[in-house]
Length: 413
Image (cartoon, rainbow, N blue to C red; front, side):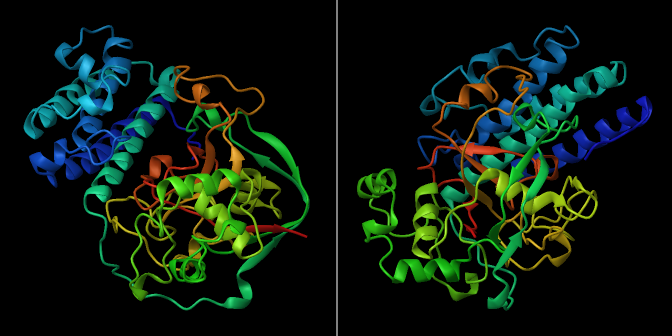
């Protein structure tokens, strides 16, 4: 959310924000044993311990070395924790949990000293970026942990759905897409107007119960529902269900999770619909017709809490929840669960908006404007509030299933 604060209030805001974010990171660290800490659960993902060390390395690089002009206090970690330092397969030989905790604490102590003297107003975009950087890597760490131990039993009972209200009508017209807020990352900029014809979009993400119908109808065996690329992927991977699938009926009203773009696309065709474009998803999630403006969050401007969505707060549930569990979190159009629970695949390739300028380095977003990554919108149960907003853009290859992704469907008139 855009924050108009005095210099002293802004300083206090960042100190508090960095402390609260770090408390969650250390809570995650404290839950690990050494074996889990160093485990590479999938070739495409680094161990949890690497992500935690990388957080400290990046904070030191941008704030202490490049910002304050200090020497690295742990130069021996540079090659290990730099994003381009070692292949993922060589990131399993890590310092111990205790050494990593000391690294995080030593860097953070100097960062807090630095924030007390730096011109925070001129640097606030960088500080906001690094706060989100820590949050993003902790979500990736949660993915790794989920791959190691896939299933957590649900704690909430399913709630009944109204079958007559599954889709909502979004009328034709312009809306403002993207954001120019200091919180936003480079790929969310610049805010711009987009015109969309009338369309319909699911009120809720597709649930496990609904997805079971696709599975039981032979959806994974019938080529008519799959794109050429999707069918080719399916024949190679030979998957028969979502990665995090559980056949327990207690999950029926939870969003399906752990599907690739191809699986989402096939389900949509199975039910005679399609996946929404990124613009369609974003308009349904944040446009307020009556006020003629885009909201930061579907429900308004109040920051994400467990009152509005299932995101990673200090009261984190650490799993999905029923898709209609947060009525206060619905958008102006009545779309539920846009934020929290699961990321949602869209039918749009990740690309730059007009006026894009990379920040803080070219490799954050720009190198992925390659027509090979699909946009995901929303956030998941493991997304911290720093990255939970309706303009946020996530991106992955369409074959990836390890992320906490689901989807909802759309249709035209």
